[in-house]
Length: 146
Image (cartoon, rainbow, N blue to C red; front, side):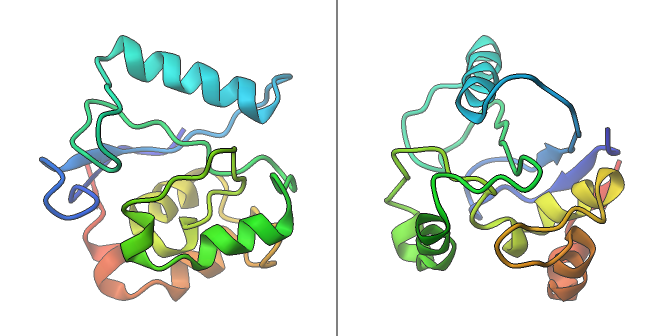
């Protein structure tokens, strides 16, 4: 498990600052089952999915699963390259693994650096460390260890 980090809400204005962390775990469950468990925990903490990227009490994401790519490389690339304006209004109907925008998010990469810096993205070939180091300094600096 990583340290806890304070970060600005994403997207900007979506609520108060967040606390972010990352864990690495082993499971016999498939991605859909894991995501179902994560959503159940969110619901226990009062999470209601009313608006995409709206204010939330808890947000648990499945970032990656080893070298697994779901549902396929073409769909993964589509969601990874989707412009921000469309990201705000569109959500995939199926599980997309690895998380399509993890390489753009300091609030993901900084905590994951604590637990899996050498994990390699199965479609880009970049490690967490390489994605982290490629982030603009400002995005890394807004992730503050608690």
